[in-house]
Length: 481
Image 1: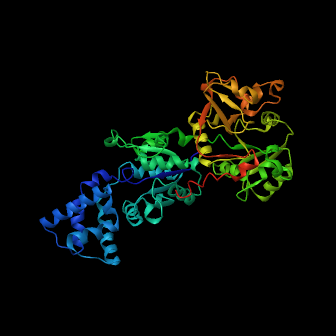
Image 2: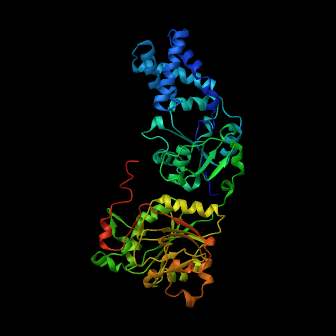
Image 3: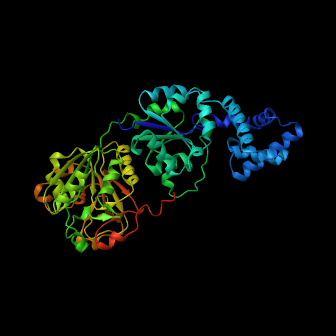
């Protein structure tokens, strides 16, 4: 099966926080009284004003979930400064009250029991770890979860991709094999999508008319892959019963790299080191990160360099095959190994570096279309003169290269060199026509609606000349995220 892991948010997904909100003032008063503080109508009014002020100031109705709130509240209302042990004791008292008072949605335990028999489960939540674990224990559902990642125990909070990556690490999981169930577009859906996890937004009946505020970049990343109204709807999602179709990737690694000058005199182009790592290692890692474990390398020029890298383990824990085709073009090379190809496979140039999430997005598009359409990653940004240009001016796709490029209209895109293809296209085209064709040229003449074109204009690298080795890495601008 494709999906192996199901991740959950907590608020308004498993716990009914909307019902709990009405109880918050009384619970705060009770915690203060149980902690030895005097409570009367005047004090209650002061406490309520302080809570409302802090909630508005921080734009959060969850502030009582954090120890700092109790420290500030008692200091401002009672003019008393607490030490760390006193704060922790009062907060623990609140956590006990919270776990007892907050309700769990009725559809939770049944669906967790059902899913646990089939998938690994996890929690990704913003908040204090003590509070979250106390809730899970109190409701007797802690046993269902294989990993629990909270912002209170890490330097990160949703939608930071690192919080999601930590959950995946805890499950030894890949994004494309995981789904995230949450109610918020700005943290759950956005965070999952930017990592490549399948996103499922739950809209309980009372929330369906919410108008979300879009404040983050790239609105497309806030669009959930699926929307449900209750947790039991997860059983109806087709993605949870989807068989794995994509298992193979083909990496082109035989070019001479003549435009790279002296760099390729003694080294295969894809084996040249960029940031002290052979270039081809990066696309290989991106492919492995997407749970593709059958790798085919097509090589020719200085093929011994590719053999050595594979022997050193660049495709660790994967099945590898090496084909020495000796062909001049990528299309011709693929044509000659078509009998060894799966029905669907990932096609990737060995001299490009891209975020593995790009490949995840392509894979998700492929499965969403019922595993029936090729997916071709394209960009508006000019690349190398050797890369084919795809003309989308008309309903019929036209792919050209070389001198014919200047004849194209405004709707032209460049192939990145990363696609999901069907081997059928190499059987449809005759041998005579295929000679000297680039891979993308096999798509010429197909209807535009028969192919999924994934436009990608974020940072990625292609190594064509020696100067390209001095480009800044794709991660240099996102390292702080």
